[in-house]
Image (cartoon, rainbow, N blue to C red):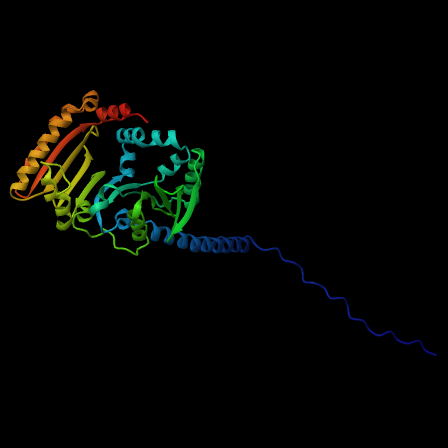
Length: 342
């Protein structure tokens, strides 16, 4: 009996030899990975940047249309010049450091400051201090404010209003701080504070485009500008509240002032224009002359050596305005700030 022939078996499959990638292929894969990461981070960056830009509006766009006084300081411009940077530190940084160390780096991130008050009866009671800076962070500011309140033994209360987080001590009678990522940061009180927040959220109109508060400031390169405007009905109400002899101030529809450095950066040059007409211009000139004499006799200003500079202020009466101008030496201004103390 013959033996059975074994069935043929297939040879085991063999894998093709692995060919290592060439240098060109490795470089291609690496470039692809880098490009993919760059695209991802680019998209994230654009989204974050658009949000910051949306929220960090120009400072005038967060100030309500109902503003009476608007003082704006360009801190970036002041920090570029050693002399004004020292004066700024003496006026702000040293005092902030003495009260809240955590606020020092926050203040360094603020590029522009604005102090504003509303028209009407709230002119002397409500206010808002606005700080603009694209890199302000809400959580950092709130944590600092809460810590300061606790250190003073107070109770920090937090809430929200629109896109802003708010923190206050107790009932908020000492003021309320509001902030959002990308700014602005707002410190104030009363209904005016909420109007500023609503304007920043674009639910109320701002002073952008206003002929006094905005367009006059647009033409200025000064590091500090002050604008004032009141409609006639409100000026009529204010006239009854002014002391005798100061009624001309209620007849001023607008005023604008700017401060700049002289060519050698050794002094600050200030010019103030007040709109007027007819006999009002003479009344304003007379008031300005009396104020100049009063400041020249001030003991604190005399001690700092500023009385002479103020006594030499020029007062020019023109057809439709009175223009005041004076020059303040920076060295004497720093002496005054040092005398005031923290």
